[in-house]
Length: 356
Image (cartoon, rainbow, N blue to C red; front, side, top):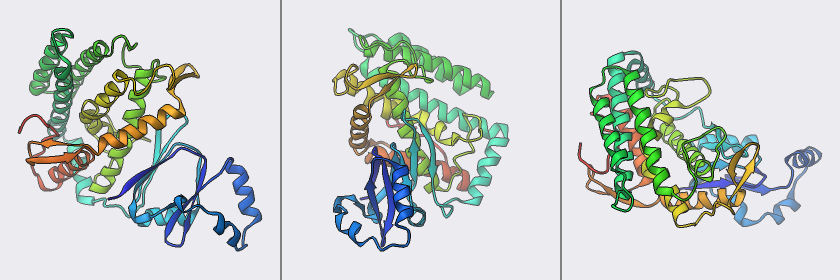
């Protein structure tokens, strides 16, 4: 089974024979100067001091997530591209800002053309927007239902979300769907605030995050977004042609569309568990930086470890009558959408609670 690798330290990734070698370093600029001085030399002595653990068997690498300052040799990039291994880059604050992926992807011209047709045809786009938003609202309502008790009543928020779901079903325009979805999301975060009490969480603030909760949500959503980008590349879809979110330059907005379905199912559940069980401590694992609240390096690594374990968990899927992992759910969602666009197969966004 292939494994994702998360690179948090400053490092240099190069190709050694037919696999990848990761060399940790303190300063990338100093490393480049050293490489220039040694250009053309046989680095036999360096070969002897390489740790075996620093080798990444290329056939076992699913993807790379780079959080520290990482440099790549061109042979390493060619090998990553040949093997179809995506590399996702995050900044110092854990924000996703780009991916490297081979031009020889599974991209399918017929599928991409159908993506464009479904965006430019109002009736077809409305159908997709309605399906995706309804799935997102179902997931929100389901999470609140799990925490709805006599001691913690969330009925008011759930009723409003259900009302907005009915509004989406009968809406005849995308703007109306957007308004209903926005109101439902505000009710949902109001429910999360009640669940998290006494941990401070007033509302969803993104730039910059103003609390540990928002810092975790932003980082978790970035990981989910990057994973969906990988699956979109592999499914033949273009990640830049979207429906709920308007396509814009410099972002993979189709990943944002599909992420809305899985945020309550995957990331929000994980954040609630980590904070309520105090696996992540709001005092120890967060810090104030540049007007916002962000995870420390220790907090980021701990959350990433928990995310890796969580996404491998399996749960029963009523459509397939068997257990599937959360990672498989993301892959299936992209494949279902591609099948709908290419072969006109019915598209029913992920729902683990009904056969609809």
